Image 1 (cartoon, one colour):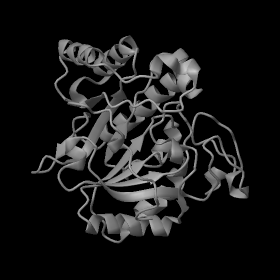
Image 2 (image 1 turned 180 degrees about the horizontal axis):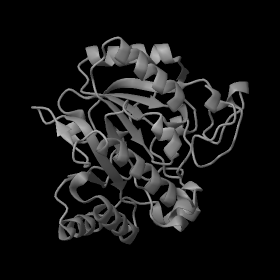
Image 3 (image 1 turned 45 degrees about the horizontal axis):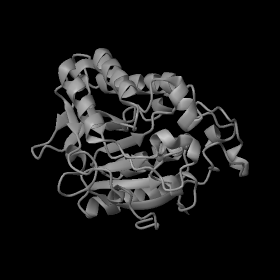
Image 4 (image 1 turned 45 degrees about the vertical axis):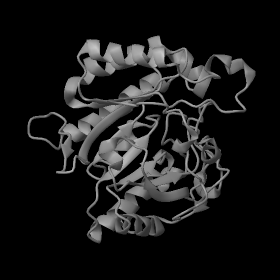
Amino acid sequence: MDHYKSCSLCPRNCNADRMKGRLGYCGSSDRMTAARAALHMWEEPCISGREGSGTIFFAGCALKCVYCQNRSIALRKAGKEISAGRLSEIFFELAEKGANNINLVTADHFIPEIVNAIRMARDNGFGLPFLLNTSSYVKTDTLKMLDGLVDIYLPDMKYIDPRTALEYSNAADYPAAAKEAIDEMVRQLRARSNDGRVRNIFDSRGIMQQGIIIRHMLLPGHVLEAKLIVRYLHEKYGDEVYLSLMSQYTPPKDLPGRFAKISRRVTQREYESLLDYAAELGITKGFMQEGAAADESFIPAFNCEGI
């Protein structure tokens, strides 16, 4: 909990004394807040499977992208305060419902307490894989707290151009921070293998038990940047990682006029151009979205179910 006294868990380095109730850039004090804990069917097939991913959506966010699909919880307009002990209980409740894993969504600003909750669960015989679903805007020192505790990393690589990151997320340092964060995730997973390479492990049903899937959600009008991201990741990590190229972008209805470029959905032509480029690079370990993926069904009700 000392990490909350002068918080620098993310690159914002706002140094808020969250222990005294002061809110960081993420909008959070030291009270862990979550808005939903339920089976989620809309992750990658090897994450959700038929049973669903035991997904816990945390409130608050250090990034606050202008187009955020989970904006109501990013801005803490929904959620309930919980302790590490209660979070540990939620893990078991999701497992009883048949969850394939425990999926921690936008949890970076609560990692110190999440570490405690995972340890409590493991000490009581909990066996499902833990998954960190993150924007990647998190410090490597923060991620190191999870070394050996998180089995699957599901990070975003949102931008590679600082100008885009500044425009849409007020974070020109995002590309550098995300590269460092993903490198730390890969380092942790490499350390688990005998040959120094990431081992992406699946069970007999094809459900991932250990590994990393790096996501990029294509933004309208940003195909070139998306291609640069794909090329960077492929050149950096090769077939050690899976890539998930997403077309589900749904523009918020209240998006300010200055963001007109991203006020529409991604076209099929844009998305196919990105997929074709990935194929030309020789990428074979990856996921794509088919059909009309841009749909509000990807956005669940943040009504504190399961909290």
